[in-house]
Length: 501
Image 1 (cartoon, rainbow, N blue to C red):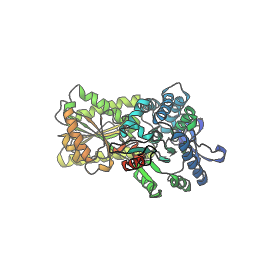
Image 2 (image 1 turned 60 degrees about the vertical axis):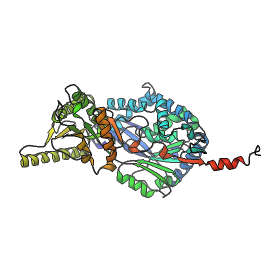
Image 3 (image 1 turned 180 degrees about the horizontal axis):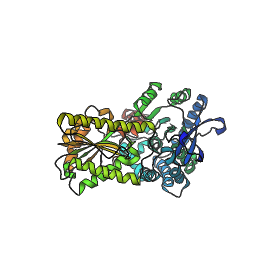
């Protein structure tokens, strides 16, 4: 719903976003981003800094992190994050109540979907899960605190960037938490750029960390600029040691071209997820349950996550046919639409869904005209807040229109799926599988070779585990530089020791 479409008498609330340690709010220009949902209008003020202010802020964060964050043991950092997350999990805490009240207005997602999504997401960042984050990337996590013995001899230590810049995406509420936490675990001073689509959570989390552990108050900042930014963004990029960015490929390329050649750039672009259902999972008992879990993966945040499925490849030969599975999936999506209504679509999104449906209808009519039977079928009506397309013929992996639109494709063998996803290696990330243990291992090897980096159970595609390797990379190792004391240096030092003979 656009701001202009808000009904007369709509309640208006204004909040200020971002987190700017050491900068007086009166010295900052603020731009208003309006959001309207139902009977509520929220105006979010985001900070617009001058290049000089951005430069000073970057220096302040870098220096504060060197003084306060980097001397902390990683276990102490984990304890601070855990205390902040505990507050976010407490529904009686004002921080959690604010998130539940305002994030549905900003994102447009159903309030109950946001509530459940936040709880599941925040649980990923409790202390036990954070220790898994660290242990997944470092066999000896103490390398983040000091030099540790290296198996080859000598010693090694991991140093995070002095200044880590984040460019966040806003397609999913609170998504900034992933990289924000990763920066803290490697003890980097962090400055994040708010997404205009969800400009609230990152600043809230920064403020919460400062309340939980005041010495960290100047070790991070949360800023904003419009689009690709101007001299303000250039001033920040010039100071960054590492830039971690999320978004579309065009936006990522624009950032890459603005960075000094010596700056480490870690981009995460758009991805295509898909699922595979074996005939072994298609008996009368299992097939409805798999369809229910698949529907949850499609429903969560209306497929806006990089891990969301667009296509399910379903094997023939089970007691339940692929067409019947598509019917089960449609029924489950219809049920979920009543419990978690789809967010209101803007004109462009509505047109995309209509165009996707029309293209499938034309393809089905063409197939019927050429072979006497339609190979494509749309289940449901254009008025439904979901769309399921069924194809009885092989189809390559392709994006849907999102907004709970998904395709079910019948295949004779799941070994045929790597051919359907061929050529999309750069876009692949998550595959959901419902299959036997033997099939899982066999298919995992084929999918890994094709470019897939994460294989999950159907139903868990949109809820990654703690410590997962995002896009097949390391969450923490990619952020650090390893410093080695070679064995030759240790041996040479012995000759100068006071006890040397």
